[in-house]
Length: 298
Image (tube, rainbow, N blue to C red; front, side, top):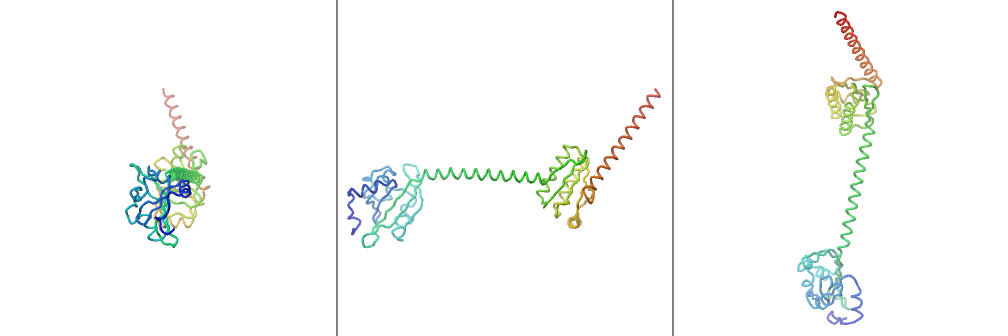
């Protein structure tokens, strides 16, 4: 083959080969004239191969790259490279996504005499990719929700509020106590007080290695809220490091009863409950005696 114009486009075997290919294929010369196109390529633009022959490729194929420096055939022939990518093919007021590959066409001397481009409609592939992406996003969203639920469950297990005695609840904390966990624990504590109508709350931090001033203030604010609900706070398990942080942070512990161990706090609370019960019994006895005297005078 000396020149692209010498190709016999009516050769039966060549026509059979290119028309058997399901993707679109066309050949242009250096002036963008279509010299060959298969049935699949012509059908994609709603034409027959004869309608496309000897016409400019940009008159048949309307894409954002046509008539610009980004023309895929121009890039392939000018740079002597294979040009591959995706674009939109505009046909009858609609856009069809296509994938294309353009490569230089050479004669027997190795000279570039034109361009060969093949292209396929990727609408179905993009739709499948979109569906797969949506499914992945749904799975990712579900996974994130599952992780959040698991984190909430772990947080709930790590901040148990226990009713250790009638009128006494305890919150034993173990591990690192940050602001988020402290806020969650204190919120659960207030809910437990409302449910149990407890008179004393024991917050034990024996298992907490360290706290900062912000966490200490969370405890202080909770103690204030606890007091507003008619309950007293007992803080136990304060180690040397935490004691130093609290003292240096100038945290006011006036509304909090502090005991060394959780058992000490429990003994204190039980003792106070016993004193209250004894006082109530004495008051009830005095009322009963007073009522008897009044009845006797009648």
